Length: 102
Image (tube, rainbow, N blue to C red; front, side, top):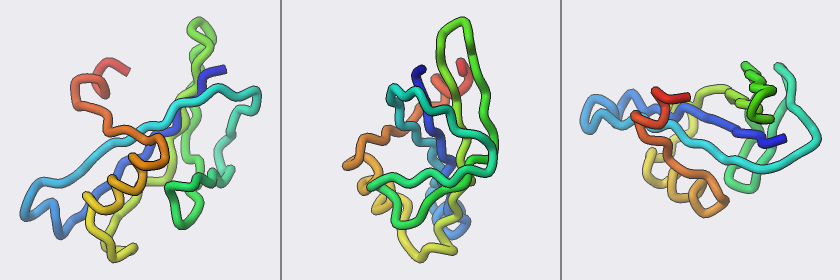
């Protein structure tokens, strides 16, 4: 099954200055389907993220896994710095158009 991990990243401080919020996704194949409450670990994170919602599309053999949103003020790191780290580990920024089509 294709697993799509998704995280919404926001910074209230940077949003006031640059309207900086991003939605990132990482896709992979797995026979293990996460469930709400699981903690997902990834080399791009410094902490795991809790699964908050799982949506399964059996017709396309896909699973969309929403992870706990990240508010960067709690992490004391800039959005761009965190995005660069995630991108280095296979995550990608999802465009607003792509997000609407999901």
